[in-house]
Length: 332
Image 1 (cartoon, rainbow, N blue to C red):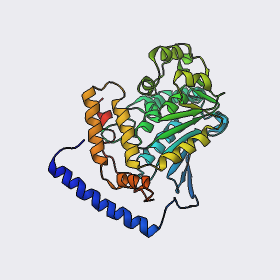
Image 2: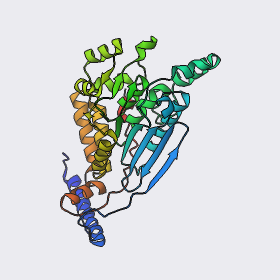
Image 3: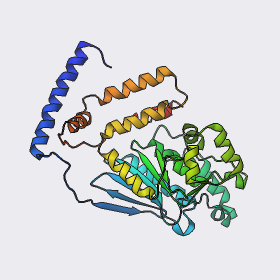
Image 4: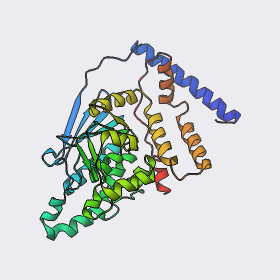
């Protein structure tokens, strides 16, 4: 993995230093199992999105919060989702994000009626949605417009994003869900690439997300027809990750399991797969694996993870500030 006598000696010395620190922390805490903690939650609510943080786990729950309209997407909803993702991106203490919809549906898609309510404002609204950059993306890597960033920005978070789907998940709502790392849905949930109904194409970062999870013929069929598929069929097509009766509970269980792992390793794993899953040469894939691994080796969180495997319950530090997390996207 790494060669060279000097490098090996440096790693050995660093390893011994971290090991001594790990033992000291473990002794001070006298821990053999995870401590019992009482979850504390901070909640914030914008006009269209509510956010709650479980400080004991670092798990954030983001909820689309326009239930009276089945979480349909109007301009304030687009802006609130993008702002929420942008705010979370800079928080190194969070460990995972659960994305869900309040009420009877995840999201029924674009609120066409709200766009048409004031025709005189339509041009200005479309400019806000379609002009790039949106102002919410990573500085120096702002490649999306606002309509795309409500999906794409979840990919830019250096933590796993798990989407819990129930009820309707149509059009833009489905494309937001596709921005997550994983999607859990109820068997009777309904999903559709519905833009064709309005004589449009899906243009909210679907070309980035869908190519990773679905064959092109299935993508074309769903787009051409706009037909609605159930959660069960969506699973068979590769559109979702898992079918379950309570997607939010399932997402929380998985998020808690992830929170027990090194945050640096999780962030690097996400970056590694997103950078290499499509359109990369074998050489580029292998080089990125090595580059990311070298940053993890004998770091505090890597040693803490190893210590836990031996029964030393040592706490993780906050995730590293991965300035190059989105390097792979800059190359596209």
